Amino acid sequence: MKKSFLAFGLGLLLATTVAAQTTPKTTFKFDFGPGQTAAGYQQVLPAAAYSPTTGYGFDFGTTVAGVDRGGKDALKGDFVTSKQPFYFSVNLPEGNYNVTVTLGDLKGASSTFLKAESRRLLLETTATKPGQFITQTFTLNVKSRRISDTETVALKPRELRKLDWDDRLTLEFDGTNPCLAALEIAPAPTATTIFLAGNSTVVNQDDEPWAAWGQMLPRFLKPGVAVANHAESGLTLGSFLGSKRLAKVLSVMKPGDYLFIEFGHNDQKDKGENDGAWKAYSERLHLFVQEARKKGGIPVIVTSTSRRSFGADGKIENSLGDFPAAARKVAQEEKVALIDLNAMTAKLYEAMGVEESKKALVHYPANTYPGQTAPLADNTHFNPYGAYEIAKCVVEGIKANKLGLVKFLRNDTPAFDPAKPDALASWIWMDSPRSEVTKPDGN
Image (cartoon, rainbow, N blue to C red; front, side, top):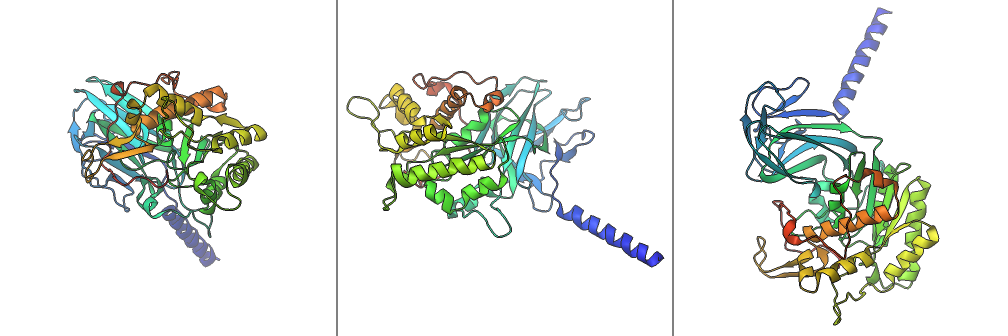
């Protein structure tokens, strides 16, 4: 009898130990710098490079310096900083997380610009005075290729290097003097998720100078809602389905989540017997809407962004055929919210004018970026400034449709009129270290 209980106890202990080893940690409290470590926090020294063993650390070869100011507050008495952008990564399973950063310096000024994963904008340039600290919380999504034991998302080769699809959450700290004092991460299972389905005008672009509106949207959102961007360059509604991306979204969608759907640029090039705006495109849009509703989701149809295609009269000419009209019709038939980016971006470009509008897209002279031996002149894909302006259009669409997401818009989000774009000179973007001269798939 004693042996049975002993065996049972050993077996239970072994099972518990294995479970502890295989269950990934999802809650972290990091105190950065060489000074005193705050109670309940884990110290992170400048030499803490990311490794699969520790599951956290400074990543991609970036380095930081540690500064200890002393003082009574162990959490704010020290920090890490760098004159160059630096990355900090944490291994996390798929899901939404509340991520809180504490920034500042007891004795000096700081200035921080914060992105996550594949250049998702979280925090524009934020300065603190000596002795001043700010704490900001963001709800971020970490995604996985896995759909089930037998299914995964079919990624393109270029996606395999994207930070969005690796096994960890990565934060990118930029700025003239970023001072990171503390970082906290906790699961946010009840957060609302905005799933994005789209192409290169929506996707999180990894590399400068390319950008899309989906990666700018998080900047305008309060904690409690996360953006899960499943868009990819070159996709159509059909290839989004075929690569199992809709299946992936539906596998993790919960009631009350949103699905924003923007396609058209690449769909118009499909020339099959059943292709076209009023056939396969419309049929698939109906399918996306209906499948999201089955999961209790809230679908939102977004018309394709206009290309920078000016006519002789200085007005944008429609280069997307019947696709914007078809999207509007499906939205009407399904009685779902419509964000008419096609109309808003035409108004935006016209307000900028023929020449100034180039500054919202990828138009750069040769040698602007490393390895760029020829000029870049792309009238479809945006640079960060253009993507930011279009994200503001999406925010206006959220307001106009009175979506439940309105309550999650940050208080510092002013009203925006695409006919009155922000002056480029008044907007600051801190470039990330990675750049690419090859344009994204699709046009």
